Image (spheres, rainbow, N blue to C red):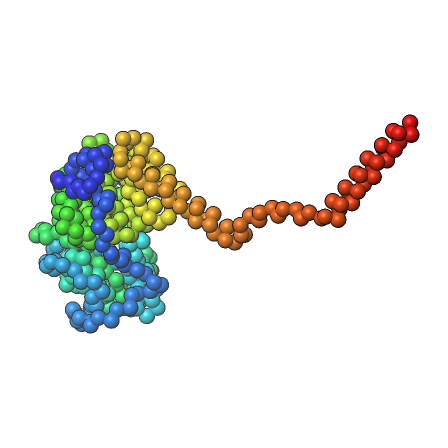
Length: 365
């Protein structure tokens, strides 16, 4: 497994095989899928995939489309078309769906038809008739779908595995799942080197999908260590990619997942601090940098970031000082007291009369 290194100090960038280093790297702009109170408005031409399934592409994908029995990993949101009621969202749950084409649940037949036409990384809006959804009866448990409801799906195909026998994650051994995840991570690292960040993140997300919470909960001892040795670097590499894409909130989330397992992970602390600093959360960023420095006291990158934070705080203080100075104005200089010459003459005359009076009194005595 190969590490991608870009101008990084030793303690953060040369511990070997698993994690990508991204400090001082160029930025690439991209946007995560949005949910603005309903299905996305799409103006692209609708493609007829089936009498009851239409597709409109939101974002183009890359590579081939999956074949029958491919294991597909996807995110989706689902709304009833008539009421615009959202009844499912895997992005909110942060858990992609695994679907084996040709072995999908009956209520997901329309979704599977749409997915089978998509390329990795493609995002699309699917219009699915009720006949290929939850049917005439609907569904009154979870998810709650009314009878005869046409469905809108916003779908993103993360990627797929071409597996002839259609072997699901649940049918794999522990070693097979960890091995599949590790291969995805390596593919992601190769894509990252080529600056194909969105594609790299798809590979990392697929790797993480092999090691969901239900799977990790069952692991102990060496198997858990093996899984974490693949899973945590994927989260860190996701964070690295998201920072380059300026999606700082998501980067913080990926680092926090790692810190839940390893609270002293220096790379997770460092990258979370970087993302927090970019969002202006300077106090939280400083806290993470200081904790990272505790475990890597000689690291120059951490020292540099702390110095930059201190300079930022100083600049903010000076700016605030100038603002308040402008509001209240400069401190007034004390005015010199004006001399009243009439009083001075009067005091001189009194002093003169007093001196003459004392002299005459002394003579009389």
